[in-house]
Image 1: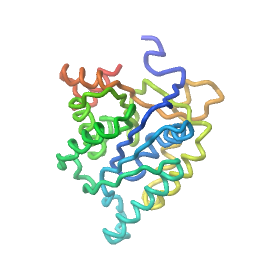
Image 2: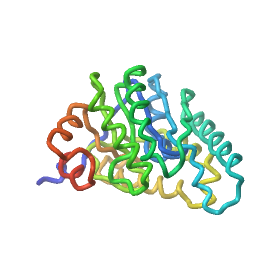
Image 3: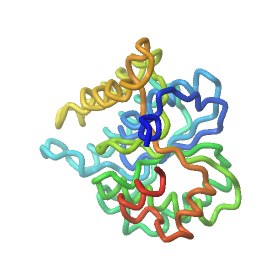
Length: 247
């Protein structure tokens, strides 16, 4: 295999689409595709972000009362999305780390696909180690299999790198992404997620021209590919199947 069969050597412009983002927790949208969302908004693309869980388990230091912490994370989510230029957000009430057990989420995602009719959906990849990230991916893929309309899916890397087949140059909007990351003070108290995310974006620029300093990497699939993957039996249930099928 040649080098460009492993990783793109050019960036792709994904703007000009109606965009839906499925973020399991507040900050996943910014870490995984925040720069791309700024580019979409600069191009006047409609963007909706849905936060699937309340993020209540993110207070690993135990500093907050539960309801106050959920309210804080929701406030951070609104403010971070505002930094990205996104005002259309929904805050779903499902419990952090229990998303997979909330079987009705798949139906709600399907209903959203039908009503919102996105051209492009951003969602965490099945290679993620956080169970809510993998659940969000699984529910989206199941919904796509039942959805009649066409849409593309960009699987994001949040806590785990993936084998990217598409790179988006975010150099021009990097500062917007950094500002949005800084809004999540409750999470940055626990870990330097901002530095980790930007380091990943820096790494993703390695195969791009020298003037590209940062990029976001995605595994980009059409809805038809997702339906075919399910038909072939490699339906996102394991990372190995995902990597093999997309490459």
